[in-house]
Image (tube, rainbow, N blue to C red; front, side, top):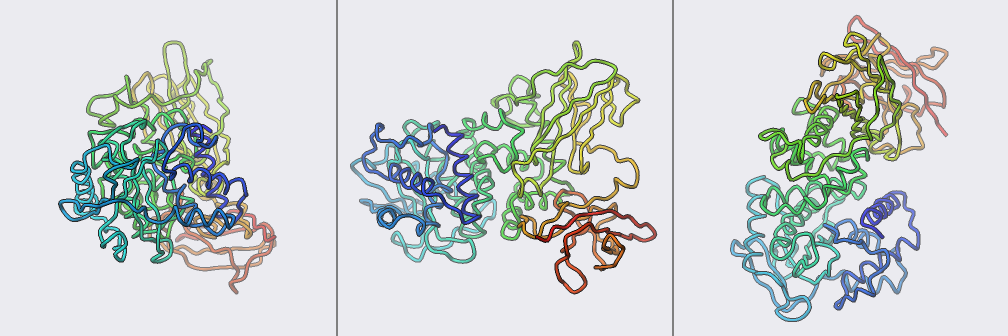
Length: 555
């Protein structure tokens, strides 16, 4: 099984966890994989056929899928797993110089470290100083003396080219929060980064998983977000190692993939980008929001507080990821951009004047890099679909759009230098933004498309709304409104025969798509569910009233 297929397997398995549906083959596969990871004498010929081709960065999701679902395995499998899931019993241990960690290891045998313990201890203390004392994250909660004391425990084992390490859950200490310990490889032979440098980035990565699970929440459906944070933390703590370079081609070759379908290792540069734009505090804010919000919504809300949106920043991120490798601008965009791969654009699409329509489709929360060639001109249009609702609830959805290019600057709403103009047909329009790069120069950056007519000033989503569906952003219909934050508007909902079923005053705030508007819990005046049908909404803001329709299915 390739690395990509293995990750897709984990994604599907996690989706199964949410739906409480588990296949015997999935459980058997996890069982066999974990037996190989924890076996004392790994023989390559005995490696499971579905084992990842290359070392995986982290076993957080894999190992804890087993921990949290131990009762789903066969009784004989449970008996073996319960032994292997116990803390490893190793020959001795030491405490790091600053007293933050206890390192457990064998002095002889298969698990004996192949790197300096002195250097490992220094790396661990550096990770603590940076992540706790500098960035201000709370430390992992004390583990009630497990491992010998309340220090955070690190166990060194021969993981045999499987995972760099993993942070394993133990006792639950609240909704989605756990006491943890970490296991790391003993020499990193056969990994992208070997020896002590492999250990350094692993402890920076895994220690933050201990912070995440102990203080915030673990939600396996947002696994990508945990890995983005921890992989970026490697770069923040140990800038000189750059192990994350090995995972970047997976994203750069697949930028049209929905954000949450990435494994997170390949998107460490997203957090690097956000840190460069807004500083470290916004990343910590996202974790503070996570217990009550899905990851994409937490990202967007944190950006709202900075006066921006995921829509705008994802598009700007597209520009940054375009200018890498030989296209790097020194002193601009990513500091290490010259070491990054090139983003994959579409195959060249030929422009034929006076206009041409490009009919395409996009995944939610992704960037589409459209490459158009006209003689000596090359136009890169970075088209962003920032539909957060679908990016959470309908991750495999595809949305059609049209990008129309004209050889006359006065025809369409987007002027491109002094040669072209363009427009975008997509719905709902406010989810979309674009940048244009003409002959390697940004001519339009990070901008939304203009609207025409009052009917474009508001829309409802999700539409249709289904009571039978669990929406990741809450069971609401959101109405976009052209108003100021904090404005009070009057919401009225009518049946198709104009019978009033609901009315209230609502305060305008940021919506999940980054626009401004209000939310509606889809109930009548008696707080009961609506019947299936078409409903008309009316939103009055001072002397202006806007109306629209939405559909409800009450199966």
